[in-house]
Length: 463
Ligand code: NAP
Image (cartoon, rainbow, N blue to C red; front, side, top):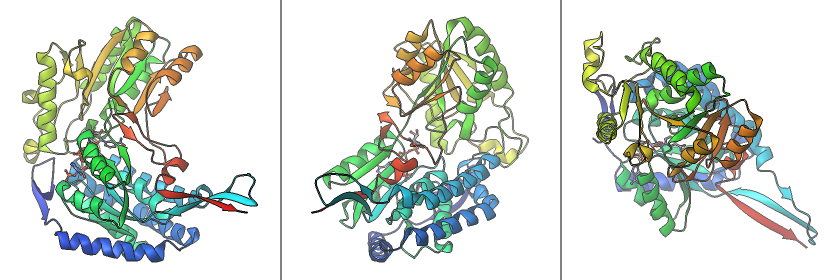
């Protein structure tokens, strides 16, 4: 499949696009480079005015943009509109904070004056995934543009209209041509960009395979990368937890974005003494979820974004079951509720699923499930919970539920992840750094840390 909008609810090909030629990529990089030479000298106030204008456009036209996302990748429409609003938030956040984050920082030494100055690097390449088509891009673009960099976007091939809409928003907001460009290209064309000397760094959000490929190409060119990759986040529930709060949040934390979020809770690790009660309530809530047309406001879960994701998830679940896992609910594509609208019969729907009895050698123990599939584990105590939480090769986020201060202390200290949320699901917030460790990647987006990733931290010494 090339670059195209294929509605995942119906299987209909809505629009196809020709990838840019190598010459067209070159001319867009030339434009970006020319723009950078001017744009790097603009003031924070000048950039902030444009970023606020972008936020205004996002809010004014949130429904239009939300619909583009729902048609392209199937997230429920209310969530799509909320994503547009969150994208406006990150624009406003960096518009207001960047001058402070990037102000000269004096450091006392034996110099007359010594200080650090933060300067832009140039063209930054962003390779982005389809699961949060607007949010992922704006959380890169807002700090990059405020720092004085310019951006080129290679978005996922199934969300071209989202990618073009974002370019249009930033142009209409008053950013100069070339400050932010969408390049409609396939993954095999990324190397040309990385190898181009005008491009100074790259960020990728996506799978481990894509991250490794981009980072090795960038490494050969001595270029910095930030990688936001997969996760299999634990959701630990101890006996002292607010059980109803934990169960309700467990549903949202797993089902958000039709189960396709890097920071979705994927492994539910529950203390033995409350495990029966937790499981019973979880199954009950899963059974009540409404699968269907994501354009309808009452739908909880829409289709998976592409046919291949559906097939991969189905194969993963079957392999786990073949290795001894027990299916508590779902797990069977042949038993889906028949949609009232016949057009939806070709949609990529997968039922909410819970798997348990996952022995140490079950493949599920090390894999990421990118869809509405929860893995359930029982543990005797905190020690075992922490050990299981740290078992995977990933280390993105973790959520843990307990009322016990000593347990909170140990969970926050010992869980190996880029973030730990206590009595809450893991979520991204413009004010807080976001990123992972281990095979979930490196570097941080958002917060003050995010804007410092792609700047020259220049040391200045004046005698
Ligand atoms: P993917 O296949 O890796 O795609 C992500 C992006 O990388 C797309 O733009 C894709 O382009 C591009 N790409 C793929 N292979 C590439 C290569 N060899 N070189 C350069 N670019 C390449 O990811 P996905 O499976 O669609 O997305 C889901 C994954 O992203 C999950 O693992 C999820 O956990 C992760 N994710 C992480 C975060 C985070 O912040 N940590 C956030 C969201 C998602 P094409 O579409 O053209 O292939």
